[in-house]
Length: 118
Image (cartoon, rainbow, N blue to C red):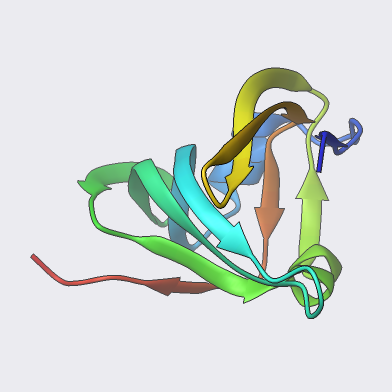
């Protein structure tokens, strides 16, 4: 995987947040893994906050996003027009390669969020 991007949509980021009844607002991911044969993945949330009635609340810690790529991408129900990109590293078996990713604010209607309740 070298470059993964999701293009802009037509929604406003603040409207996406305001119309979200309950969820997790993820602002940074911190590593994970993907099974390339099945698309199953798990990614750690390094910065995220609870959303309740359209408002950002308490920070979450120890959370993971878990799913299958095709199912999660099919559950995207809102995409904003605020595209941003970032650089990272993808690695396996001690090898690392620079990668680029980009996405606007988006909402995923159904995804498994796992972790511990501290």
